[in-house]
Length: 273
Image 1 (cartoon, rainbow, N blue to C red):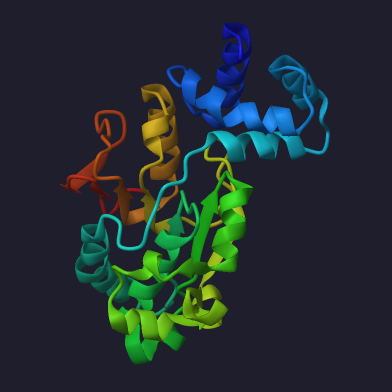
Image 2 (tube, helix red, strand yellow):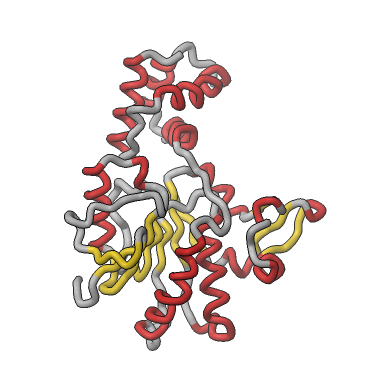
């Protein structure tokens, strides 16, 4: 069992480096670390934390993030967002980018890949025969290298695909392992660029985004961390750009001047830089 002092050290470390508030999650932290510490041969959590502090390779830090971050997602999650994206956002974008044919879309909590691949499927379906004319690659980031490995592999069980439309299953997946698993097609994979990224770091984008999906990640942040993150998001949105957050999340609009379109869908006013 980790001590209160060890728990405090972990909480402070995760908050300072990743913005994640684990101050009420001692039982969860203990459960996730216990087996790892035993298998790693550490005599105590303090021994592990001391090793973490001197590890120049970053391996122990990656492992801690992988252990302590929750990555629960699935295809068709909060599908109303994708319907709005198709019916309202994409027609606006198509008109706005008619000459450049350049769409800049960022999925900031990619997890195991279901969400960015869903966005790619909607884009492919919407543009149809025009799809090759557009640069519609999606940037998909997450702090966990473990889930990103799964996302890049793009392999899912038949059970995970059960809610997808049949035409999407046929068009965007190919069966592997005797038909019990399915892999994202190479064509769709090429439309998603996966990268490890910490939302607390300065944004590295050279150009602003037209649409940002930041769903079900701010629930782990306190109010100040959320405000600071949302200000960065706002600064990197194109005028008229859209922000999607999780349907159970809230956003303090008094600190960031975003228009509310629907609960969990927001927009930066056109004309604002």
